[in-house]
Amino acid sequence: MKIFTIAPDFELPDFDGRLVRLSDFNGQKNLVLVFLRGFM
Image (cartoon, one colour):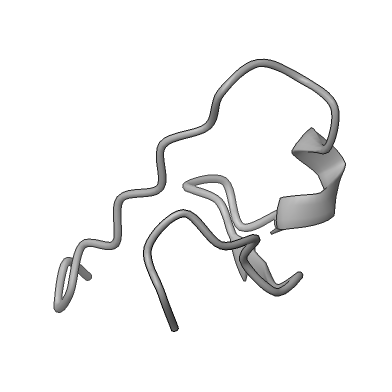
């Protein structure tokens, strides 16, 4: 995948266990994704 391409839609649980989709933020301000590997 190249830099500055549109990411595919996916869903992950938030800190409260609720599923959140990337598409839930479509059309809003800029979004920064941080993946904490081995956090939990």
